[in-house]
Length: 593
Ligand code: ADP
Image 1: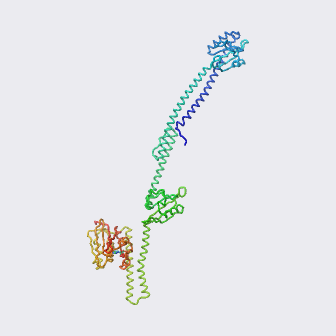
Image 2: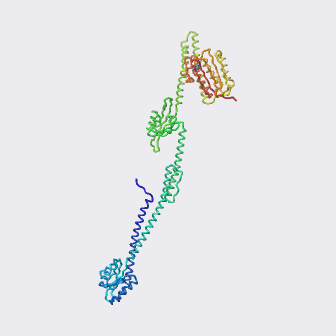
Image 3: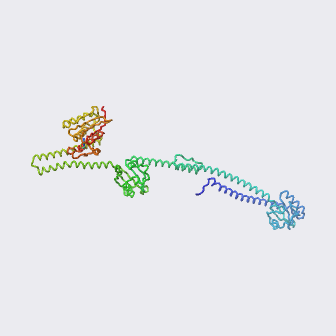
């Protein structure tokens, strides 16, 4: 990992190095230029002085008046502050403003003297052994009445060195101040920049955490302000997109969770991506806990797994009925189809599940019912057809025998009539219950029950003598009187039919909470417990032979159940084998206005 430094640490050292290098270079170049300028100017001044003052020496040199030469040298040297030396052509010094010429050695070999003697203006910058310092010399040659001599001016360069070192010192000082200023400026600037960047960073971190409501402050720098603006725009757009995504997700979740069909989405590795509430109920799973679990684990059904695999293999929309549950059988009708991603590639499968247990149950009931009706009708029809064929093809000679045949045919026809009447009654009741439009009136129950007993007494006085009625006169309910009469009549008929001829039967009516209980009790043989749950099914009989012999259709109790249900009530049975049975209809109680 690369090491990262602070903004100041990154920018300041190269800046300081650049400044120092620049300063050194500028100082070097300007110092040299200054020095050169100074030397050029000094040289020119020395040259001018040499040229001007040279002519003054023509007369004393021509006269060889060395004393006059010496005095003139001193006078000019004193006035101009410049050392003046007069040298003869052979190098003998005859005058010097600073030293005694007699003590000075021969100057013929001095470079400036050599150049002057050759007719040029001699210049030399060198160390002076006489004065023990660096000096600049300018020499010009003259001819005074045949005597050649050289006038040399010179000045010490010690002042120049002092000036230059002063200049260098000042430049260095200025450089130092400049470097410090640059350091301070870059520190302040980088600190400001760092703060702005830190603000951007904390803003970006807040955005990354999903905190998209805050906005970044606009910074002073245009570039950072642009970045802040861009990030703020990004946050607004993200907020909009998140809102849209959340809204869409909520909508689709609401749609999925309010669907009555179970919906399960599976990815291409057969792992569950999602399951709606109805799906969770159908499969007995918590929808939140099944995500990322395998479909085998969630469905626990080989048929379901196979269907998912077929759908993933791209075998078009599929449909299958799948049986679930061990104790309680449940049937699911499942439609499976492949899920296609935005790029057109398969990404999984979608299952839509419907609970068809009730439908299956109804279908089974319908099938059983058709089989039962056919069977019930077939017996009398076969019997009728047999006797009619016998009468047609081979009529018995005996008139009594013929009459017996006709009575059997009549009995079977009555049986057919009874079955069809009961079936029609059931059908009408079902229709009434389905429409929810049972015509009922609030009325006392007692008169209805009395009518049943009265009808019975008219038809079968012996049977009616066995029946007692016990019903309070003030008990009222919203009932359809003819239907209740029919139901009580069926129950009473069964009680009389299945109990011994001399045993009593009681019809009772009482209030039971917010219900009216109408019961018929006999002291007959009773019904074994295992038959009780199915007793109210159509054509269900405890003892088939006995029921047929008694002229029963096997539909009486089913009709009673439907009549009770049409009144939003119910029917129940309690029975002790050998002691008798009690059938009770519970109807909603109602006080009549
Ligand atoms: P059925 O026409 O055969 O009487 P129901 O639907 O009225 O048909 O009754 C169904 C069966 O219930 C009867 O076949 C009979 O076995 C039994 N059952 C009904 N009522 C009684 C009762 N009071 N005592 C004993 N068995 C009864």
